[in-house]
Image (cartoon, rainbow, N blue to C red; front, side, top):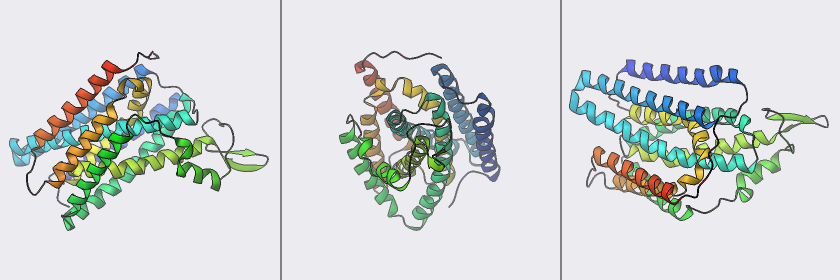
Length: 320
């Protein structure tokens, strides 16, 4: 699995991720269980976006030193395109999280811990899948066509499912979990297990964690092929994915407050998936430039969000 990134940049990336997780798990944990307000969510979202762009600047400089400005521009644009794609797909992931939390009536102060654990699971899972995917593409070029067709089909399915209210009650995973383990009727703080009548049983928060983990798997399967349509460099694929995930917790609390305003976003995401899938299928016939891909992603997202805001019902956004 060839990569253009030097070893020191890999080490720097790992150090940044460790530092970010330290902030999330150690520093923020001192705050205890608390509801994350819109202001706090905006501030942390800006921090993660700024960190991602700063890393891309460092990436550009590293490539420029060894390969010149043209290749540096191309590779940094691949990172930015991949980051925007993964970030936009993460929005759909967030709406599923919101549905799960709403269904189980998870208190706001408990949602932060669930999201933090879910982020760790997503990072580990995507790292494994990216490495496997990169190896498959290196060994079997035709896998690109499989990925492309999969994205096109996924995009079409997402279009038809957009606007429909998901029925979590009929979710087979939830039914299975409820059958194989006893679950308490109420939460016990942030605990995943509690004791009732002398027996240790799961709390609803444990079911939430399980469903969030399954959601991570489903969305990883959808999103990993999309980034391989932009680049096959495992460093760019991995870093753009991880940086998109790092800000997921803050972005959740931000979007949860204004979810109704982006009711058309799924349509835009479906168009992006079909476009990326088509790009992948045509890779040996006509290679769509990275700049064009970036432009399509930005325009589709911007138009969909603008149209969503124009047609959304008015909502009151709580401030904290």
